[in-house]
Image 1 (cartoon, helix red, strand yellow):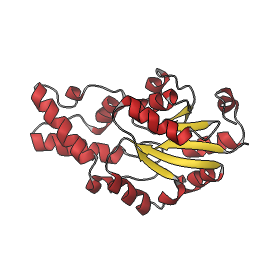
Image 2 (cartoon, helix red, strand yellow):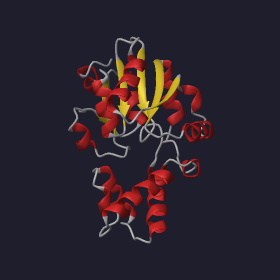
Image 3 (tube, rainbow, N blue to C red):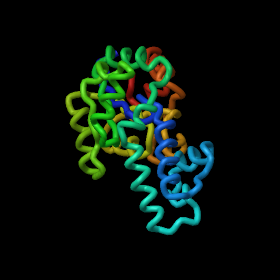
Image 4 (spheres, rainbow, N blue to C red):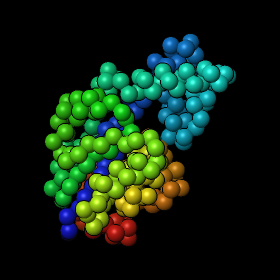
Amino acid sequence: MASLNTIIEYEGAVIDVRPRYWAAHEAAVTAMGFQGPPPDEFWRLLRTGSPDAMMIRRAKAHQVAEYQRLRDEQRHSTELMALDEAPPNAVQNLRILKEMGSLHAATFCPNREGINITLDRLDLWMYFEQKRILPQERGRRVAVLKELAVEHRTTLAVAGTVTFAYTASEAGCRVVGMKTGPTFPKFMQQVGVDVFFDSLDDLTDAIARRSPELQKIGIC
C-alpha cells in the first residue's frame, strides 16, 4: 500500500466524549434550575442534531441561549475533559495508522491545553504529527484540512460528526464515519459518507485487508 495520510476527528474517533457531553449538559441544566432528559434520550437528541430547546423543554429563547453558553463553557473545560477516555485498543490502532504514513488529529474544541493534557494522560499524543483546532467559519476550516492533505495523493478522514465529515469532503478527503461519534451514521450519509466502522479495530483491519468498501472510495 502507498503511504496513507490520515486525519482523524478527536470527538468520537480518537476519544469517547459521551461522559463529558452528558456532564456538561447536567451542569448547565442544574445551574438554570431545569430538568433535562435522561441520559439515553439526551444522547439520542444530540446524535440526531435536535435543537437545543429540546434539551430544556418549555424554556424561553433567552433561557435556551443561556443553556447553550453554560453547556459549551463546561463542555470545553479542562476539568470535564478529565472524563474523556480512549476507545479500546486506541494505542495499537493509532500506532498502525501512524506506521502507514501520516496521522493528524482535528477537533472543533477550542481548549488546546485540555486536549494536550488528555492526550498525554492517555498516552496518545505522540502518534499525531499535528493536532489542529478547526475554525468555526466553513471556508477557514476547509483550508486547514486542505493544508493537512496538500502533499498527499490521497487523504483518509475519519469522522465522528456531520460537520467534520462535510468539511473533509469539501477539502477533497476520502471520508469514513465512526459509529461511536456524536452523530448517527444516517446523518453523515446525508453529506455523502457511505462507509462506516464500529471501532478503530474494524477500520485498521479493513485497511490491512484492502476491503472492497475502502477500495471503492479510493483507499487501498
